[in-house]
Image 1: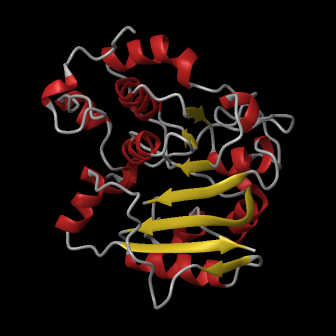
Image 2: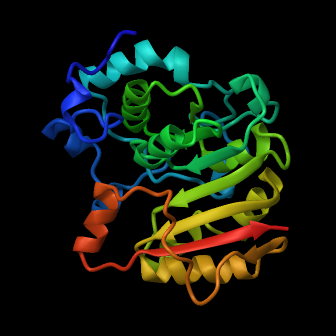
Amino acid sequence: MTRTDRTDPSNRTDPTEPAEPSRSEQRDQQDPRDQPDQRQTLPYKSFDPRTFRDKPVSFVRRSGRMTPSQERAWEDLGPRYLHELPRGHAATSVADHASLEPAEVFGRVAPLVVEVGSGQGHAIVHAASELRDWDFIAVEVFRAGLARTMIRAEWADLANLRLVEANAPEVLERALPEHSVDEIWVFFPDPWAKERHKKRRLVSPDFARIAARALKPGGLLRLATDWEDYAEHMRETMDAAPGFARDFAGEWAPRFEGRVLTAFEQKGIDKGRVIRDLAYRSA
């Protein structure tokens, strides 16, 4: 197997964790919430009132370039890990006729987890390494993050992980079969903190409808955020969502043990933010 990252992982505690990104990579992978003035939307290829911008989206922007190692990973590992979907009217939209059949993609029938906005892949690669009898789909629009996820997946030699470069709600609504997903993970989505931007938040009544369509009966929607106002918004939205019930007692769910503590989460903790978890089970 050709390694796309030259650093030997044998000296690291976690063999699934490749070398830390360079300073240039770190600059390209900064938390977009720390740069609110750089938020931008994708341009339309052509106007269509049905395009995804009228519905929940799983991203803020797609700026940032890939490093040479990430470019190599994209070229070398893309054929193994990247699942291409036909495009709609925008760069990361999904065509109405798109199809993602898990049994065909993985060559087996197994429990399925879809992570919405998988970032650099810390959580999903760790989970796929621990649960090799489950299948995992990471949906992300940032190519640098997807490339980094491929590098991590290769070190772990994962056969149960695929990556999709697309707007996640459209993947859930258009590409995946109805009631085919066991768990949907949404960890630390952009909180859109300004009052005039809150309508852009991913977790919304329409997203709840999309998640209900994708989840199997009894499936779980797991949420986490370090933004208190967004946590309350998530809870209010999902408490009112048809077809969902709380899978926790009390005000908040306990921390999901399957979510590794990432530098992103630690950054929120260091800033004094409280991490809130929620879990809702599909009827």
